[in-house]
Length: 215
Length: 220
Image (cartoon, rainbow over all chains, first blue to last red; front, side, top):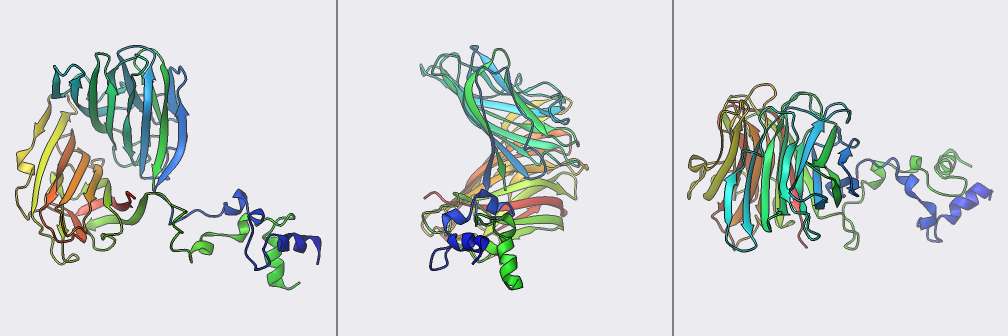
């Protein structure tokens, strides 16, 4: 038995079952469809560390119909900051796509003296290239942060507008719980291929943004 | 060494590791279930249907007691008729009839592209009270070339024969009058029979284009 044949034989047990030394990650390179797998595919994780912006410039393409961003404990350097986002049609060279959107919120302060449900006219956009608010007025106390999700649908379409739906929650600067629901569309038929997040003033001190593709 | 053995040998590296050429999707086609210790994830894509001038899209398989929660995703649903309402109903007889009693709520936020009006409102005309009509998911959908509606619908424990069947939905649409509308229906199918099929359609005209995906979500 030649050396190559011996090496192959050594990759199998005496009963013919392939051993762990017989396969590695490269062995799976041709597996493109694991139908038994989960539907949320983690594409990237961005961890903030006193960052002025967080840009995701890869992974947003035609591979998935839906992309899910998950915000986990985004903590601003500056009190009363607004966490916001915009899209790019040129791979991140510029962020300024026309958006029309809605914004409403529920809130309740720690003291129990104030609560409400209202449309937030200052947080929506009408055919504007400004950044879209996701969480406004996040506190910068050590324990204060914001979390939530943003769904972006079919960003690579060159036929339709690009819808987004966001549901976030944060602790306000004035010691209140606030839930924001924002939705709308990038009013463009160009493909969106990058997204940038930032605080309106000051850095994002800490927190993570994960990007998932939804199969 | 015969040709088959030679081919086999070529799929291994000189150190005996299986190369990518030795395995492809077909190699795994015989695996239809993973052992309990190898969880594939709690959310699984069960089926995808793509509309092409379809009068309705029905899911008549895959909705059973396998999963606790079923989730539908609507991707760029485009109507043939301007201003049509995208709706759904459920069946307790495998899709022979879609007419289960619904009680629901419906609220929405809207904003005109020309910034002339905004609002957050309960939309009483879009809810149902013990009705067997189709439940609206997003309404007034424009049919301009770039107009679509998109969103998600969760259906909880449809196979229960004890409880009503709750649903939650959150959608965004580009209205026929150039308005973005975030439309949020919820409610329940007021039946203790198992729901085992779901149908989607526009209130008038066909579904020109769009994709609906069905996922199963396990909570255990």
